[in-house]
Image 1 (cartoon, rainbow, N blue to C red):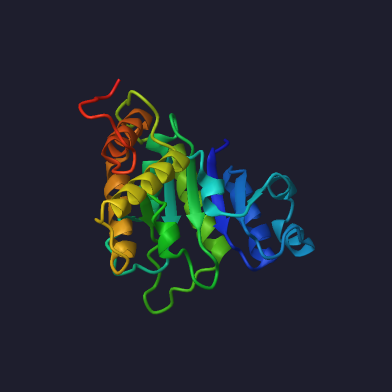
Image 2 (image 1 turned 120 degrees about the vertical axis):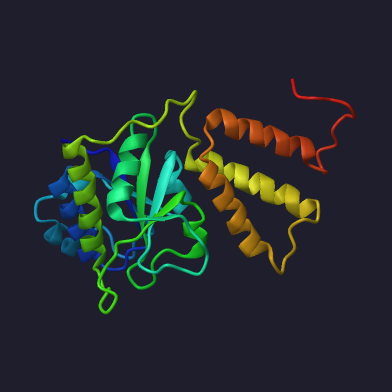
Length: 247
């Protein structure tokens, strides 16, 4: 049983973790691996730790940035070991698996894991619709990167074998991809800055809050096009003709 979910490792530093991740994926039926700016890859250590999952390693996509790795995905979940002060939408691995299977029919899905030493930063978390947190022992929460991948892949497989997940309500169009969402966010932020709404002192947190707002809405492609049209019409630098409406 092939599970069409992309595992994205952001700036992995240890090649052994890359190989162990490939092994964890293959044992659960996943094969789509993306590496964002890996420190050492390809690597003999990665191949050795893959223990036969050479095809997963050989087909891994290597990108310079996270937006490149998730650009075609309509649903992106980031994994975080630390629950930051910001109120990100947080789900557990089992709920995460159910949420993914509800959306797989019409959307590409990515699970994003951060660097071993620090996890995903706020900028990367801002590109995710939801955050998955593995509830470990509070007195010893140290979980190896590949172990975390194994837990999430296992839940994906068990959820599918149980086949108890209801499909998401049918939409007129697929969810907007990460690339389309990023284009909208950048467009909106430019217009808000030009209008004087975004101020340098507070703009970082406000941008994250705006991203969370639209991520919760999960706009589809038609809706994101409408939002882009609204932002374009309000752009003070666009020089619109007075009284002109949408075509």
